[in-house]
Length: 488
Image (tube, rainbow, N blue to C red; front, side, top):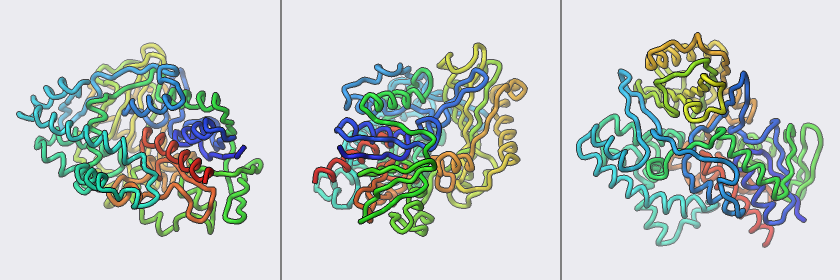
């Protein structure tokens, strides 16, 4: 039986390991941290349960398909609730737009803001539905090892219809002119790590995913997905070794034959790295897939400054997801991508999952997750974090119309230095590579090492890209490539 080592117990690593175990291989996951989940880990304190990273549950069909591959269902593991409203957006002067669940309700909301936009939204979503069907159904399931995978007449026709060469921003303006509606339409692009002007219009499929398929929440928190995937992996025979950091490799005849850990060494026939791609490349030394020059030329998605807060009262004004677009996004975007620096007037996001889930906070309390996108690789200090904490809280309190700071009974911050320490994240990024045109499909870092015959990569820095569903797809893609190569 072939022995396979998967480095990292995030979504992509869990998907790879479970798929390969299902195929009959002996699989072990090595995880440097104490628990599985990667950026989707969880911690508890003072009666609060905090999801550390992902907080949006989109593309429920991807999760259903994943568990379905193993003859399981999502409901075998956790219970989903559809959020209504999906989220609220707070604009200048704290003008609020609530985005209801369901396309018909959403069309009414749009029509109130811009006459004729209900019909335009339907046209926009009809086009986005095609992109979702083809983009998710075909393009993201390609291993993208070569440009030739995309050279068929049908794929070329599809590529043109998918607006790969048009920007998200230009595409949105074909349908809408109101500034608030444009921000609402363009907001999902922020999950892709680039400004709408630099993101292919293909990704309007995200609007379809959110508006048509809905925004959901797994009761107990997003970590319930991780728990489900770990349980399934164990059921298929995957072994886990936690607190086991990979520090080097033994290489012979263009193959990795040993993996050196902080506390032992292991042998394997195949290695799949679900850890930070760049970090693993450095450990491979002269066998790394890409040079330092290559990595430093990549456009990274942002990092994040996050605050986890336990509040000893309820905050009526907030819903589950709250987006603060009350400042100029173009200025904040320039401070992330063009002239990297800590922002002057940042946009930010507040999640209050305790609005939906009573199990994650003590009775009468609120669980808050506050995230501010920032450029990667900036100086990160407690003084800087505290400065922005005061800025964000002042705006949050002003919007809510009540004091919150005096009611904080738990507080923890997390930023670039934490991403580096916990995940070896390249330059402290939070979301991998930006999904620009020149970092899409076969232009992303390859899932296969070009110098080593038995070394693969999976996760948000390779295909198909950042996000929870794409990471799961990445894991399944790599598992298929491993099996193909083993069966040659």
